[in-house]
Picture (cartoon, helix red, strand yellow):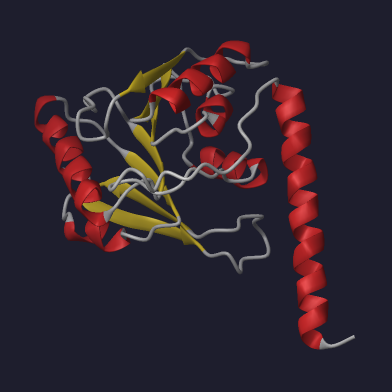
Length: 213
């Protein structure tokens, strides 16, 4: 068997295992978040897709969520990440998405989620309109373009003058990571590469936090 054929077969097996794992997690949690939705009709959003549960769980663990945290998924889609976050004991989990259809699905998933420990709120609005003043831990799966990323970070920074607090960010598939780097109030404290065999992630993830004052 040629090398390329072996690599293709290995990738196919890995993809099948991931699909089966996701299906088992959906059954266990009582939710339905799978599928890909084309969002190209919206000029500032990308398509909806999901991260595997096997990748989401370690990301949430690494954020070290506590009972004082308000976790916000910016671009929550059908709610897979907020459902996983709600299995942690935090003050509140919030999903934000501009798609009304996605928000309806996300809210329904959160309502029937098994083993939920925290309240969940789903807000139908654009990322630019949302009030981030309560948020302490944020998740983004590359939900929009560079311009909106810059606006959202600026809005989050402004909330610190009114309500100083420590913030953490998990940015999956960080296509606009340079925008995070522009913000001197932020520092990157870790980066997970897809080639790290100790973690079952399929896109890179960068972790950022607000600098202490």
